[in-house]
Image (cartoon, rainbow, N blue to C red; front, side, top):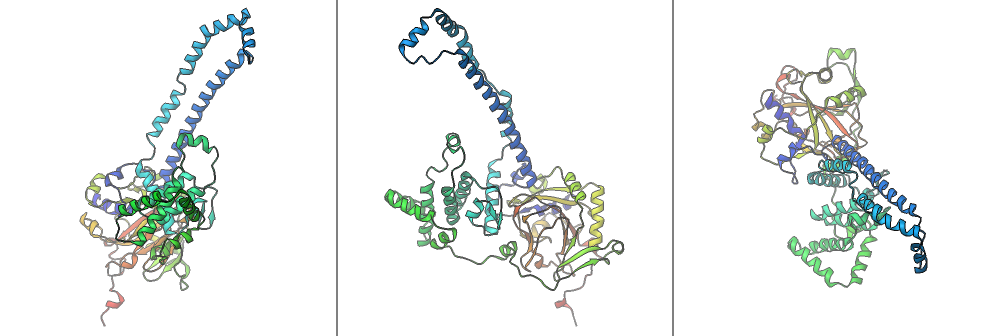
Length: 530
């Protein structure tokens, strides 16, 4: 069971050139799922509540000081004669001496008295749970995935326009700068210049002067950085043999030697440019989208030879309660079952999903030598429960397969911008090294979509040009192997980045040996003997 568990756990991790140390997977990161982001949202709400109470305590202190000053009623006494007349009155003179001797020292002590200590302590404790640098990096990478996978212009994202859907939220100037700097550091100077431009174009924010006095002016030096980014891109195009360090040095020298007026004209020119104009002027090659990008953008050709029908034949039970089945692809076989998971069951699943983790246990991680990237939080339903038993029975009805040898279900919640690279569900060399042989290869896969995903998060099969949009309550089933149990490379599939929404799924892999007498084991058509 331990080795089987390790085997199946690999589904939530993918290799990536920007991956982090595997040790990080033991930590509770917010960026890995919407569930984690909800925890972060509650953390910020609690911090704000303490901040408001602290501000109220300070305001009360200010109000008390103003009240005392107002109570003195000394008048303005604008000239020397008036002030002399005031202190020459014995009543005023006595009150003046007494206040300075008895009251003002106490008011001074009052100003020094620490207030809101409980709130300050609470805020300090909450900040200890704040996102770590890894979370910030992952969030930047998630935004980059969304931007690239769906070919969204920086100007649209900055203003809350995502795939022709306008949101009531816009990015702040600091948000734009963070994205610009991330792309600059990664060497994507075209996109970096577009995000620097959005920051410079950004309209003034309310109370910016007060906020900048604490946080600093975010636009200091950004105009020159914008110009530097464009020059670096141009120099890189002119001589591909130059190192990055040389290009950066030449760009800085060019700007330093140019007159302020020329630099200002240069910046103004590019500030007026659109995304497309900047791309064309700086030599961006308009390459056709990859198969992965085409699938995520809904560009695959539509199928016309597919039907929907009631499945009443897979098991005897379906004669009483047939299931709505939609053909997605004939060869390889892919079908979608509609309305097989109720709202009540989805809520029941989420309750069973706690706690969720980011990845593997220490013993499982020890078997891996390559860095991995988390794409979701997962939980395993290992223990028996009415929900698990019902769903396994339903899977048996949909597939006709035997699931009694391994009844565990995997629950996953994807974060915004999370995805899964193109991969196969059948065994790889890495999994073979773990010694997983008890149940054989993954003959089939089934995914239940347990939430609404307004944008993104589609399951795509790039080699056969199939895109499946997640639909709440539906389930997707496909084969990973041919009938002779050899791997079918056409089952290559991926998950597109989630743009908006919380993508909950339930995954089950159907293994080879339990289906020995249930699944045909005939050779492929091209291999049949005459």
